[in-house]
Amino acid sequence: MTLPARTALANEDLLPVTPDRRTWNWWHIASLWIGMAICIPTYTLASGLIDQGWTWQAAVGAVILGNFVVLIPIALNSHAGTRYGIPFPVLARSSFGVLGANIPALLRGFVACGWFGIQTWIGGWAIYKLIEAMWGGIATLPQVLPAFVGLNSGEFLCFMVFWALNVWIVLRGMDSIKFLETWGSPFLLVVGAALLVWAIVRVGGFRPMLQHTGGQTLANGRGIAGAFGVGLTSAVAFWGTMALSIPDFSRFARSQRDQIVGQAVGLPGTMALFAFIGAAVTNATVIIFHQRIADPIALLARIGGPLMIILSMVGLSVATLTTNIAANIVAPANGFSNLAPDKITFKQGAMITAVIGIVMMPWRLYNNAAAYIFTWLIGYGALLGPVAGIMIADYFVVRRGELVLNDLYKRHGIYEFSRGFNWIAILALVTGVLPNLPGFVAALRGTPATGLFGTLYNWAWFVGFILSAVIYTAGMRVSVWRRERGEVRVGA
Image (cartoon, rainbow, N blue to C red):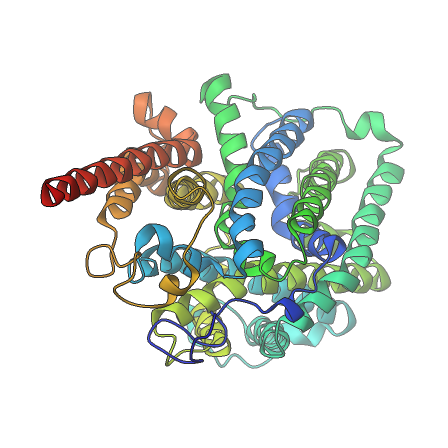
């Protein structure tokens, strides 16, 4: 296809990737997922469930099952990216309309801004603890920030250093991201394995470490089915963001085989391994320190020894960097660029993301395990699950994998719908979100919903995905039927 580099719907970052740039083989894709999966939020996904009284078997089992489930929409949405070389915001135009696609792109983008801020804070905090181990004076630097910020000068300085490192790598382009993921992943596996070995040695073997040490029950007041729904939904929602924006990466894959094999190799096994490390080590902290420590940074600070802290914090910083850049900058950068392609480039979109990540004061978002799982993960899962359902139903059921590439980049083509918006998709999105809204509001208040709304919210991602997919498919078929009937009358 021949398109100008800058129009109201296209720029050089949103146009299809040319064949000579599709160089990512299955190992590059696998390394991408290994690098993203080995991070502190993966660790705390399982350790947070342990902290809520789950057994390690239940916590790790929920994570493993959830990642096999979410691998399905990830692989399905990857297909269009690899076949047509298009990013997520452009693919969304086929279902939401050439202008309506900004709705899912911005929803995904703002969730990513929240994640970018949280991950940047985690990485900056690891740097702070690293410097503190070598020079305790960083904690007593003159206070220059207002009290409402909630950080001392050293903490904010380390946060900004890590923020700048993220921005520097992204501004160098996608090839630098591929390099970071490919070479950083093996190192991250070594760091995780070392932490597990330390815990085994300290508690005297696997058996005492894997004993259930919690005083709560698995259900924790939600019932077994509800608790299972929470665990599974949080595990699926964890990568519910990437289930949408994965075309941003699969568009660089050499073939469908490369993207499918790479993701199957890189995602479920890595999540299972690191979730197990998080669950097992958290269990061990009860024996070692007589209190459960779910945060790995807090744990590593307790281990002692400057050398151990230095090595650990460097490892955590690299882990956070690889996840943050791939999962939390690329998607919103493309999403913001999609708002005005003729004015906003990928790099400018990345800078918008980075600035929002500071303004959100993410250190205030990184709360306790209950808030992290029940409000953050399940909450945005309720929002993004319907988008995934609509996009997959559109590509595989309504369009049978066939897109008119040129029309994705122009007005008044087949994806124009009604002045650029497909109201069927918007209605399906709203309908998919509404049943989960009462549960989300209750979670924000710290009083989980009960009854029907509580049950629905426990399964929020699945409820939204299925409901929106069904409504969208039915609505589009009715629309086609009405249009064909109108054409028959005109022809007669």
